[in-house]
Image 1 (cartoon, one colour):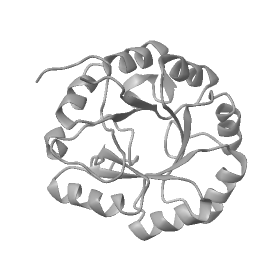
Image 2: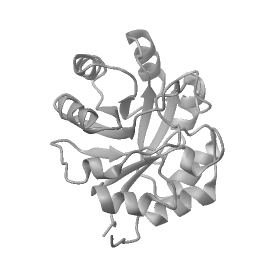
Image 3: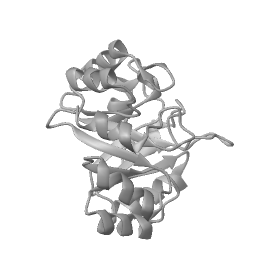
Image 4: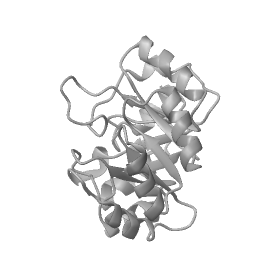
Length: 218
């Protein structure tokens, strides 16, 4: 069964996309602070979007190798609930960010093989949540949001001591299978529910979340 799956809609850039995610039943609303991304938002825009997020939906700030100045600027202005570290942050840096900001931290780890899966154990010791993502293709500009998936069987029998979220190439068409194969209780989507990069499609958001509620037998 895939009922009770918590969904994160990441890379929100417009008020109507925030509304679409909340109305469809998303548990998390993600905002990207990474200039190379088509989903990048300014701190001011993120603040305006975040105040539109209903109570009960967690607001997530995605950063990539952010320094303390950027973290302070974001957390000082945007009412964020969770920080998502999506760069090459070490376990030590994860712990440092957590202590500095006083916010829960979700660490994204790119997976392509068993060696990458082993790294998840290290981050589970210091982060509040881990996000199991597809490792970006070589020469990719973005650390995530590339619309690629990984072999879900790599983590089919794995469990961690902290809550974890599955990401990477998920769509309304494949998310139920991904949940069935991995046992994920939480999933993250960005490009898979877009009309174009950075512009979400309300219908696809609704289809995606509805698909997480459909049992799949493998």
